[in-house]
Image (cartoon, rainbow, N blue to C red; front, top):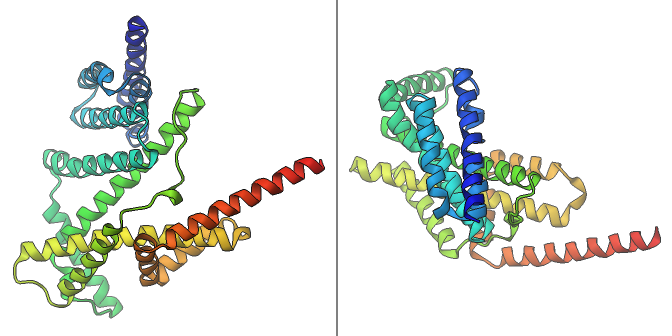
Length: 323
């Protein structure tokens, strides 16, 4: 068993090295694509042998990245391999797939923020300068259009918070794509990975819904009557933005599931309708998200969804019997 483990580790390290070499030979042109592929060899190994057994392979991959790439490539390769190590360890220990997804998204968000903080400082990226340019562009745009917006929305501190939140959300989306791409490829390669659980079945803790609505209330207070302390004001606006995103996400899921149950024939237009509601009636989607989290509405939808699945199975059995 041990020789097989060593041989497999050498093989996945070699695959990782080939990707590093291709990235170097193309001058980093496909680096954004390789970000979604770097974790896969480590996921495959750790899913089969566990994250503890994957540490030597991770160390070998890190050494290869130092030998075959510049500082930026090393940072991306090592961080993505680390995400793959944790992801594969979760698969090995049969952790709930929804929790595994959130862990991968959280790690990707942390890496994305760390990327801006560290690589930005090394490459000369000046956040203050970028925010000032954004501030000037927004002021010019609002003046030309005649729109009146609260002064708080155009302050440097607020724009920095929005930039940070957008980087975190972008990192979460990247983690979701890494999760889906990794599972898809591993299934194609016949690796024994768990089937992902539908996001509709995930029931978030009720206290998170109350916390999100409280954050939104504080956000509204901070926008209308700014706090005297800048640190407190920025913290309230940042937490409020996360509360808004949290409620919007679960409101999107709630409306999508409702349409799937009561309007099953509209197909892809369910998603389009949810996007339209998001932009035209965001407060409605937030309210739907709050009810979805704290009330029995989610449980009721799941019961209806399960009944609909049973009906579909019976109809398929009848059709097969008739054929």
